[in-house]
Length: 355
Image 1 (tube, rainbow, N blue to C red):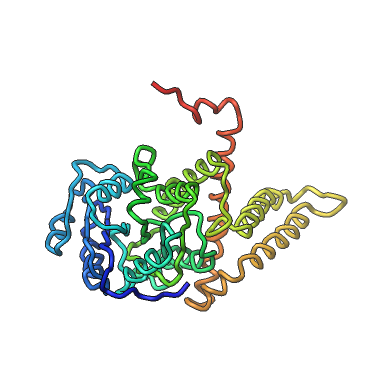
Image 2: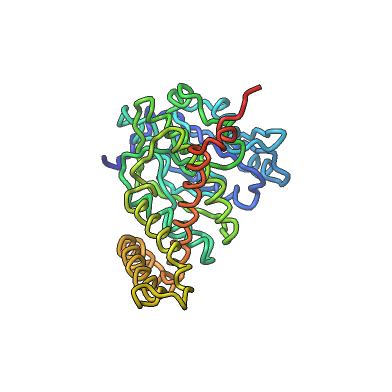
């Protein structure tokens, strides 16, 4: 597929839908980039999800159509509300802390117009996050790397910067706002339903946007565990569908197993007075731990090479413990959810009684 731009004549109306809660810090930059877009015609719909700051006022001053929800309902509900009031043939969902490039919308429209079999298209963050602190750089570049090294034929959807034909969005019922009342994997679940209907989703690696959000260690953990790992594990177990792209490739599954084995061996390192065939147990555990870590490093060498090329060796050394931690809590989250689904004592938690 080529990144051709369709002529401005006969271009379909594209509706940009931005769900936002207290996004006054970033919304102006987000809207300025959209206004500067090379694509026309577009309409910009901002859904103010119960903000208590000046998000709505700033958005109106930039010329956006603003709808205000009386209370915070979550991005799934806000996006659905925006889609209901949008007039475009194409719906582009972006986050309020994202800045698109001038040609981004034209690329999206070209793909969806030129290839009728494609229902949706999404991109990735670029490799130059706006925030310079270590956690923001690590997390956004981690996202960038995995999107850039995944197959173009996608099995999920990303609403940070993702578009879908409105007719198909309406057909599948939009985001599941009843299930996802807070920021979560509502976009991933939408992608599952798009594919289940037989439509195709394209990951366009040339569609890159800048992320403005500042991540800190604790906010990253909360998002990764409670907004992604746990709900995604539930979704995988419910649908019995485990995609093989993005961060669910075979190498990621093996990495999770290696990290789990590594942590299971750690207590043995402290059995200083215990021997196995006259060999101190800590020596044996240390040997196998080294083998596991070496294999983990080799398996993820392309990621570490990417970090080194972009930010240097010291940055990469700091990344490795966080990367190991990522696989640890991702694996623990999945196993915990699996226990809830498979052990009868937890059945009531998995299938609550209906009123």
